[in-house]
Image 1 (cartoon, rainbow, N blue to C red):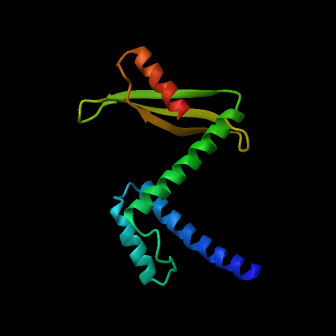
Image 2: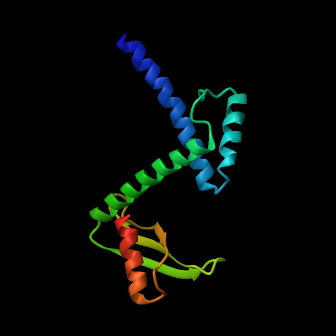
Image 3: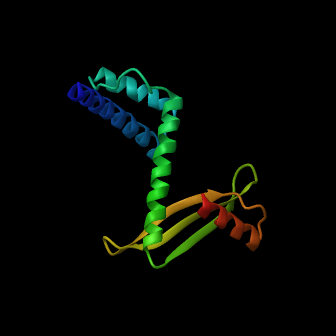
Length: 143
């Protein structure tokens, strides 16, 4: 019974992994979330087993949120390991005349010994002042 259950879960894990990879593809290429359903349908036509669940746009959104949280945790762990890092921030105004601040961190990756630049986040400062930007940085690091 145990072996049967284990095999069943392994097959389900493989299906979920394929769905996560598809969601990551959608996010990485900045494709519309509706493309997820089409890509899943294409994969099924090509004989890829995906199952019958988590094939919707909302499932793609959920997968992307989980991927994002893991990536944020990984970045936080790397920043905790390094002795120092630098923060790069740039402000701009979008089409809706809303001030936005995009932030990147640059740190030395210990395992490779090379500098790495990573996206930290984007925040809307409460004011276009230095204090407003500092609060946006604090909010981004808390997140």
